[in-house]
Image (cartoon, rainbow, N blue to C red; front, side, top):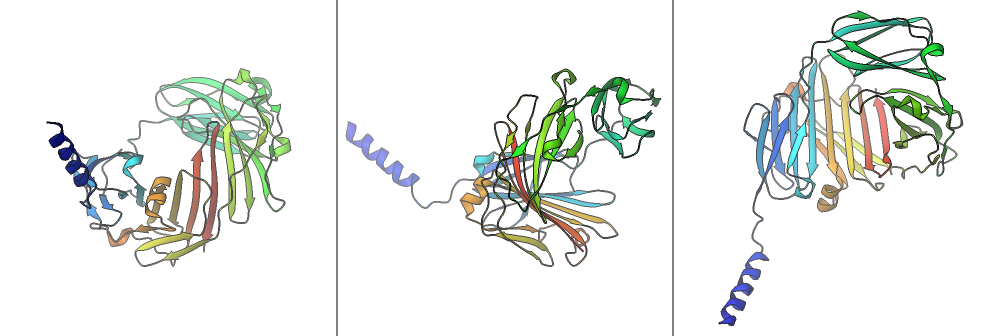
Length: 363
């Protein structure tokens, strides 16, 4: 009675390892606000519209490496996100088409010293002293963070209406910053180096920041109780590489930069932006941005491709495509006009993250 079972098992194995096409897998796409266009294609297939399951959710069937395009129509122009990944990266994508803006209250005060000031997702800065800080915030509890050259102040506030706060003097309210010089162990002689300190009260808040030479970096002491990162940046022409990590007084001050990008080859066709490379640093994602820099409605394109997509497809170039059903002519970025383009690789580390970047304004 055992032989039929063995034969049956063998037949099943042969059937599963045949050249039959893979079964489709349904992916889910969610946007924060209704999108003007959502499309998808298999790596070897054509673009097609995704199925709408609600005003902000969509579905599509894919069989392997795939791309998703989401177009967000704004008052001033259009933003397009494209994501290239594999099923190993996940089957759910969440992409932003903006967020409903809560009622904002005006918050202002005078500040004695120059500096960088944040309140939630609002910021203001000045290189001159005795200036008026203008911010905004929704109703609720927040923290004003004021960062100067030698001090930082954290002022808790509860906002429920437009308000003028008392004058902020860092010499009185502030906590002195502490010298903490850092080094870039693998920087080259031709690179210019800087260290960027970023501070926030909560992960979702915008960061107060300043940039210093590596040997002049000052950071907050533990009693400031702020989320603090230090980014070491090495620039050479239009290229830079950087490594960022959470940082506290007493941490290792030696930073190791990622490898630099190899040569890049850009091309702009009537309906596509393409960039090719010869080599890439170790990465988890690559990202291509192209943004119009001319008068009139703007066009902003971003394509992100996962390392597994690059490995599975064997590509040495990516293209931001606009030859998509439903894509409007007025959304196309004119590559013959002024535009900003960038290419970056990134990966997350246990202690932070790193990025290798090319950025160029083409006028």
